Each structure stands twice: as structure tokens, then as C-alpha cells.
Amino acid sequence: MFQHILIGQYVEAKSILHRLDPRAKLLAVFLLVIIVFFANSWESYAVVVSFCLAAILISKVPIRFIYKGLKPIFLLVLITLIIHLLLNKEGPLVFQWGPIKIYESGITQGVFISIRLLILVIFTSLLTLTTKPMDLTDGLESILSPFKRFGLPAHELALMMSISLRFIPTLLQETEKIAKAQMARGVDFTSGPLKERMKAFIPLLIPLFISSFKRAEDLALAMEARGYRGGEGRTKLRQLYWSLHDTSMVVLIVCFGIGLFFLRA
Image (tube, rainbow, N blue to C red):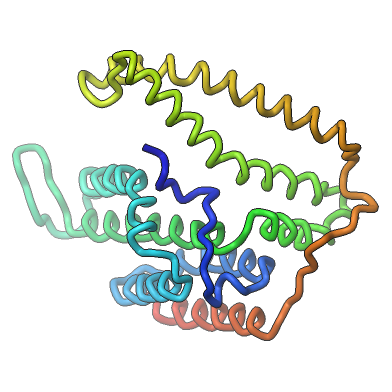
């Protein structure tokens, strides 16, 4: 049920994206999230989609794996598209069926927002799919470390993100295990009215929350027993190295953003 969730997953592969410094990938994703909002025409969105497909091919992550992971997002994308089709009343009338009227601007904006949402999810997912959680944590801590002088707890924030990414697959497996156990006892999560299906999830959430709190308590006790006291004075087994490939990728994305900005309608 939850085996194809993209969040927190890492796919081992030998690609350029896998070998890049995690700090470069974090910076690249941050820039791409901003650049995607530059697109506002069919031509600019075609360029963004092409760039996204190229990134997927370069990452060597199976396209089928990404497609299965995006399935939960498709419902949100469909709802977004329908909302724009029904609420946007600008432009020429394209279709009318009784009180339902669909205008050209509603179609355009609905498609654009849907594509933008999918692109953002894919870019952020490629970050975790091509970066080990520990490397991602080290990269985030390194980026945030200059802000320590302003009181920002860089190490604590990076640790929180690392624990969150680490336990997302674990909690999903625990959810699937509880769901299968309850389905074996006659609970139906897939049929019946929506209200009844929502009620069926309540017995699933209660043991999941109890299990999550127990895992958090065990983790806290384990860290305390091992003498964990924060990031001060700690050394690192894995050192980060910024190479020419990292600089080239950031420059490429900046040039891509500049080109997309001038391609705006």
C-alpha cells in the first residue's frame, strides 16, 4: 500500500546526481523551486517539463518507480485542476453544460498550476532519491552553520530532518502492517460510503500514534545512553567536498532560470 511513497526514499544508482555534493543539490532544488514560478506560458512550461524529464533520466532512477510514487499526488492535482476549471471565469467560454461553464483561462491556469505542482514534487523527490539521508543532513547543517552566530540551532535542525527522513519509511511500513492486520479481522478501507471509510481509519491511527510515541521514547533513551549532547565538538566521518561538477550544475540552473525569465509571456 505504501511501498512506492517517494518521501524519505533513497535509490542506489551510479549517476552524476548521486555523486554531487549534497549542498549543491540543496541549493539547486531551492533555486528550481523559485525558477518554476517564472513559467507562465505554454512555451516556458514545455521547457520546464523538458528540463525535469532530463533530470529524471540523468538521475537513473526508474521512471516507473517515480510514476508509482506520484500516484497519491494525482488526486490532489485533479482536484486543483477542477477547482480552476469551475472558479476561473476569465476569457472566452469554451464549454457549457447547464450551470457549469468552463472558460479558456480556467483551462490554461488549471493545467499550468497542475504541471507546476507535479514539477515541484518531482524536483524535491529527486533530492532525497539521489542523496543518502546522512549526506543530506550533513549538507543542510553545513549550509545553516553560518547562521549559528544569530542563534540558529543548525545541528539540531539537521538532526530533526535526519530523524524525520529516517523514520518516514519505518512509519509507512508500520502503517501497512497494522492495516493488513485489521483487514484480516474484517475491516474494509476501500468500499462503502466515504464517512464509513473515514471511520475505519480511526482504529488504524490510534495504534500508529502509540507506536510512534514509543519509538520516539526509545530513540531518546538510546541517544541519552550513548552520551549525545549536541553538535559541539563532534567530528564527522564523512567529509563534504565541493567539486567543479557542483559549481557547473549551479551555474547551469542559474542560466536556465535566466533563460526562462526572458521566455515569460
